[in-house]
Image (cartoon, rainbow, N blue to C red; front, side, top):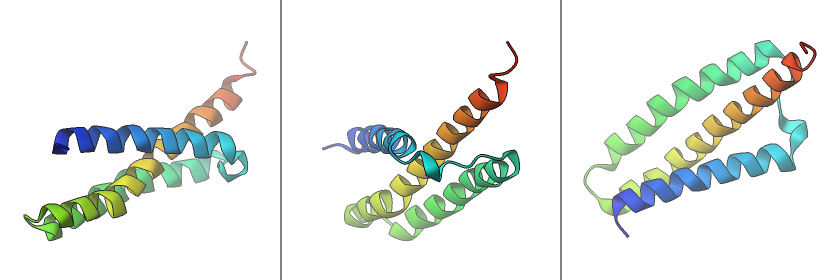
Length: 99
């Protein structure tokens, strides 16, 4: 399997996992604006630093890159998409009374 197909598959799997978690476990969702901003900031900062560091330390080894992909990048993507899903649900609830 090529690297491009692996990355696209990981991205689609991350979206699917985030949507599944958002629907299956609705009590995990954050309900106040302050907390969702904190999670959004963490979802923006942590993956940028952690994924970059993981892939830099992986070097040229394909096996280490796959480990970095599935142990660092995949959970980071799931967290980013999950925070986005929570943000959309919070916006939907907040704006529902404006009809």
